[in-house]
Image 1 (cartoon, helix red, strand yellow):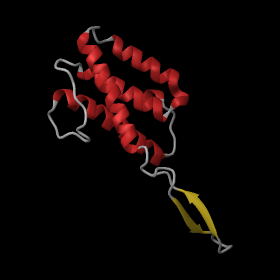
Image 2 (image 1 turned 90 degrees about the vertical axis):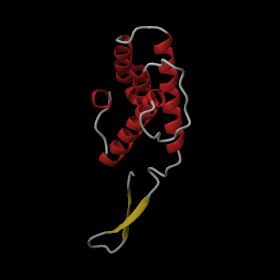
Image 3 (image 1 turned 60 degrees about the vertical axis):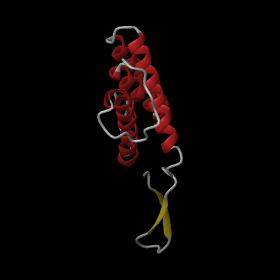
Length: 136
């Protein structure tokens, strides 16, 4: 979804954001399937919840939070992806898990210091420091 809906940006920001999207989708699916050690391990799922719906919604919600200007493309992609899953309790439960995973990961990363790290680099001829923001 990210590749199809989000314009390229600073590679550090894009890498961080891609990791957030992937971890949210992983956490959502793993909450349902349970094959791997969870990243946070704070979520629960009803039996039979759709892992596909969970992954779609986790990706959608994190992308929307990180790239609100791309809401139309993100929403359109989510709608098309969810339309392929039959309506029912499984889909509804998967959507709930995906939404919870997105909130959990975004909350966990909210105060990670991204965009706040400021370093100083020497200017080549002036000998004064020029602030440069690193997006980590």
